[in-house]
Image (cartoon, rainbow, N blue to C red; front, side, top):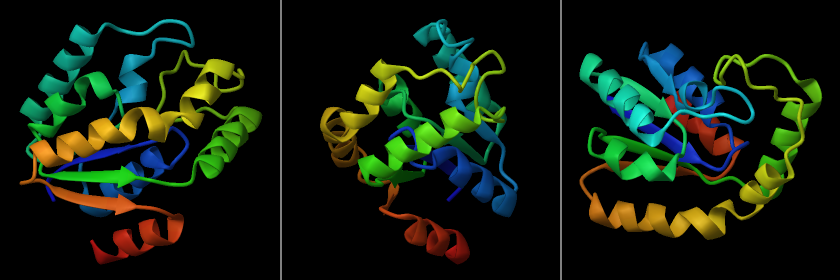
Length: 166
């Protein structure tokens, strides 16, 4: 477990798990939300994101990359040995993003220009349909890359136990 991807629905706890693992393993983290978003309305290009990912994996022999970005998922899997899938209940993910919005505290895992306090209905719909829209692609990639270690965490108790075992 040296080159870790953490994926799953927004609000599932990917960034929190990334931080906990990084602290325990002393690995650097690349939070894709931090580098992809400029602010709530602007993002970098896919090509720029790939360059950032490439530079990061070329610079670190051990790492954690936190984020979905399905357009680059297969690319990231080629550099990884471990994929952790946060498969939490959609209602819990929606609750978590609403709590984030209401608190609107600055986060270490998101771009400084991003305002967490804005309610974005398209983002809510994205979270609601995440499993339906993205899990088949994840399953297909698992089949394509069977040599990787996969962990599917379905609740926070499993996350806690996973961290303890590391």
